[in-house]
Length: 452
Image 1 (cartoon, rainbow, N blue to C red):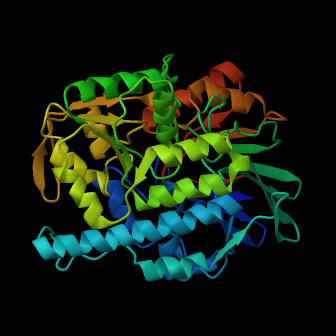
Image 2: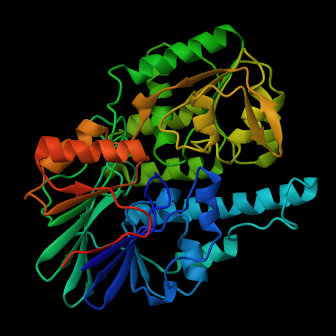
């Protein structure tokens, strides 16, 4: 068995690992790069392997940094099957179509306003590319086992994090390579804990929070403090949030605050067509999360759902306190840009960053104290209060990652640490070596490892 790392090295985006087992060539995840320009440019470069040579893609979950390059794969010759759990398949349809739509919309905007260095600006891929890609997705059987070849099988087990998220174990000739995918938290507001106890000879584990612990604070109470403070100023609370996972966690936190009478009775608006569709899927797949029927109904009753573009634009003319949840979670695109461009320059308003912000994103700039952001070709001053609440993250922290490793059914021969910023990944490597006494390393881009 052989692995080559084509993404999520020294970054939390662009997850792609090529696995060769016997005659089977498969890709674990096929994500889009985000953040620094040097990373984003990889999305436009030719794929570093031949898509037509692949037999399958094993998709751990639907977030764009894990699934967002699938339309590029199929457009460039992939003919195989994309294996995903039922919830992941449902979410991919929502996320990929919306991502393509936003790219087409942004290209049109830039061409219309001349805000582009490329003439004309074009989307990375189109809605038609996504529709062609979706035809390749096949749902994993209920037992989680996919037979890829006579001697090669993949086993999907729940990873928490978001709906459908899985760890994936590839078994070949009595040996197993286990990919953690993005691991959730034992105490997540919405999702159930990740499954533990898998046996593997080699492990590839994410390290988004590999160098830190989630703060020992009540994230819901902190969110309530910010909302009350902003409402007292007559301001608007803008919450950038990923459409899947983070949005549902934020809405549940606001629902809890509203039920407790801890925040004013002000409008809660979800301005995200993708987030609205994803929230509906959380109701369809209720067995995979903690929320009750009553809580799902309460969130729906509390929230005003905005799909229409004109209705979204109308929010910019409102003068009363409200809470707007909109994508994207790292302020890399989507409707939240328009809200931050409009409300960000005013000190009465607040911007709440509800989780990890990758280097090179506007979200990371806000966390670092940026006084202006470049949006739509010009710099916009930021005078709004900016607060980061990491307690709402759907990722396991360092302690959670180590606990998941300790719970494995056997000591692996080696642990490969990816999907983390350099410091986070290397810190986790040290902890795995020092605390567990296991062999661990951090692969670099295009590193190939012969597991045999």
